[in-house]
Length: 496
Image 1 (spheres, rainbow, N blue to C red):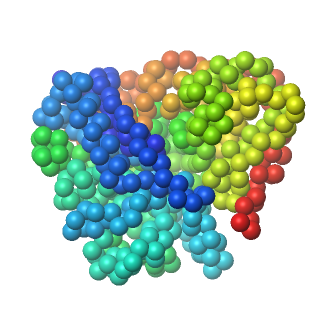
Image 2 (image 1 turned 120 degrees about the vertical axis):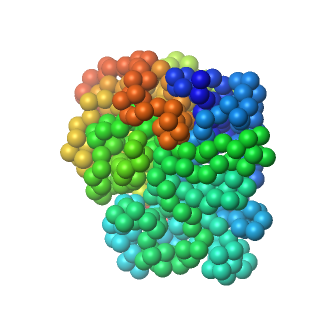
Image 3 (image 1 turned 120 degrees about the horizontal axis):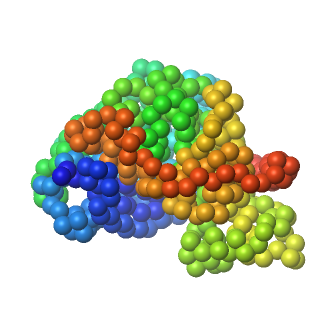
């Protein structure tokens, strides 16, 4: 029997999951790490904490499975995307904390780039909007703010990477500096047409190419681990950013198939085949391919969904654990007219408003914690609806169903609300760990454990279908109220 180790490095925790050659989960381990908030709108991680937590969970999962590194056929990596790190090539020491994808500190710089007329070129070449979300402006901020970093970068003394590159660097003890197409496509520096870093964009943001990693297909040989790290040299043979990995893990390999992952944020992706999509409100992004060929997807990125539930727990204290929200929200038949817009770090797709801020509207003396909890679940679902609506308009494809995964997909009430708000079925698979599963699939394909997309499709099975139950009149009324609330949350931070 063959085993694959999937390293799933997320925004709030690092996880390691071991799969066997039947794609069954054998063992897993997870470890949270500190979230750092130096200023409002700033979010950072300690790169060393990311690495050590990921390494710790890998060893723990192997212990639980009673396996050693020599038993592993391959390693797959999936990761939080856009999060930006720069480290010294000679020592491997980070020059600054990782700037997390949620971070908004470069909003003013993005406005300067927009005012200079750079947005059309960025949009055309990368498929992305000009936004602090992506890595490019975060790189520039570090090079500007860390003493001598700009000069050292130009000399090739520093290395940039998203989290996948950082983990590969650590696993190989600095022998390999590489990323995959899906992660590269999230930097705002990668040209989707030429399949390479774009010189003109590098010049616009003033980033030296010397700091960038090589780019490979998601199903590729990314080198072998140093035997001192895990106990044996193991090939790293699959890498994809978390959302593309989830699309792959949901067996969405063909144009028109779509999924939504509920995590810290929510991310909807529709596969568009080998044709690069065009959109005014959504993102065009690289997708992982079973055969290493070029593939694309439309993506809607929603910044705050699961973290809104964490805020109910940690900020308001109205639930003790995230799982408590289902019972609390289910204790009332509706939200009582309350609308929550969880724009804590601005609004992502389809609004792209970094100045938006969270708000709660419709409060009365009769409002309870349960109403706020239910309105939070509705906000998660309504944000997904906005993205799916834009996706259908831009692609010309009307979705017949939405596949779902991620931690919150286990919440039956949320999934029913999602189906009601969408007006179409929501399909939950038996295995909710689509992100890690996608990384394992990619690694296993490269290593020869599986033979192609058809074999992987056979391993995907349905747990439950949620059919819409809400009347069309009620659905339309709730969507209209949501849109009014969003307008009140937009542009709030202007002048801060």
